[in-house]
Length: 582
Image (cartoon, rainbow, N blue to C red; front, side):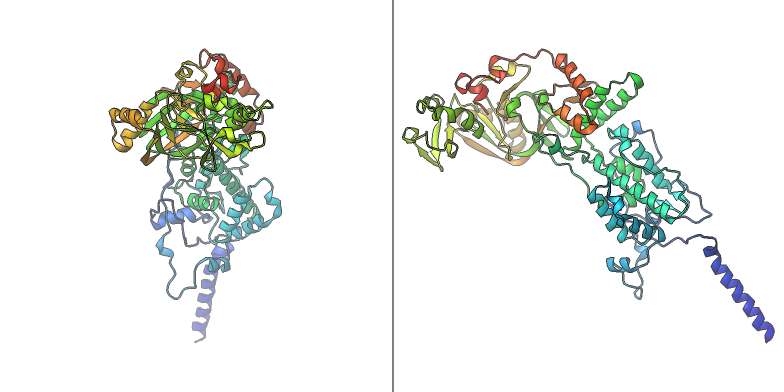
């Protein structure tokens, strides 16, 4: 009996020792994955992939090897920018048994956190970390790690995971995407932090760099409104907390980051032009590099989906285009606003086309041209109304201008309308895409403006050369109209509004550089001075771009003739269609 008791004692001792060995060796057992997150498309991933996406630790006997599912690294210059993140969704293998403890946010908060995650939470709560971190990024990180109880995203007991190292390398190559690599404070990819606190610091530093990179890639590097009030665009920024979940679940997180950049053809052509220019080394033109980056940044502000059929008026180029399924099907000359009345940059949907429209005089012309004539010290000069066939109304009701005491009246409270006819400044066609700037496209009764190289003449609206052709393209696509049908409407219609069944997007853009399919770049003059402003915001100074602008003005767009009426001088009665046209 004593021998059996002694034997049992030795067996129990050896069992206790065997159970204690992992803890004595300092190795943490792998935790079962709970959730790998949800990808944007909602596709699912096998449990093994979900585990590799969420686990951030390895046993002490394991070595950090590349993720089996990650795509191989390629040369950045040849990398495909359109790669989408690999679809990953939570595994169902971690669902609790019927008698298991309750799950959910409250349970996650109550459950003990991984020691590094606990240290991360403490670090994120430290006020010292706020310096240099976007508030929305910090809030996202705090929310993300407050709900996380499993291993960290990137750091392991033996340093950064292979996935983390791929992310670091991708961010280090930010210059190849027109972003400043020195803007991202990255931890060394081979760093071996000696303790939990240092591990937490590395994890947080990488997270902050990732969120900043994502914001920059999506156009959040600078605010468009900060550059100029003319730019009415809003970058499509990703929610940082959602992004953390998605990149954490992605099998190839470096590919996920590349997929955040614009997928427009022109963006990639500009990027390739940037790589070629920088590849020249010391012979590279710094001003050219800045011009390319400025225009790449503008593509980050464009809608991701331009539309399957859309109109684009590129202001510095003085050209309008109709694009169908990515191919230009029609291009025409356009006239844009004078610098004093610069055409704004925005996107809106075209909703109607008006045949033989009337014209409501805009506020700028009422204030600058009509009011001085009507309030003259020598008495109101009503000839300006008669000469331009302007009807006057007040609160929607017609009034006789001769009965109004213009000296005391508030001219801005009256509406002045020019009826359809051969002298109407809008010509025979008007293209409406409602927007807060009261901008539209239209015909003109002064076709000679299209003979000019520098076509700035309006109060902001876009004048279109041969607008009947544009109307035919749009109405053929929308309603199946023929060119003959359009001609009939022009002959018969009187302020006739044709509503479109489809809403064709209209993009008023300001690209001073484009690249064709052969890689040849074409530049256009910075007519509103926006390149210099963007360069100042992006690079801190615009001197290099100023040098390039001087070169561009010297010959990039050929002879730069301007007629006298297009000089920006002269009164309304001297140049009806030059200044008295919107």
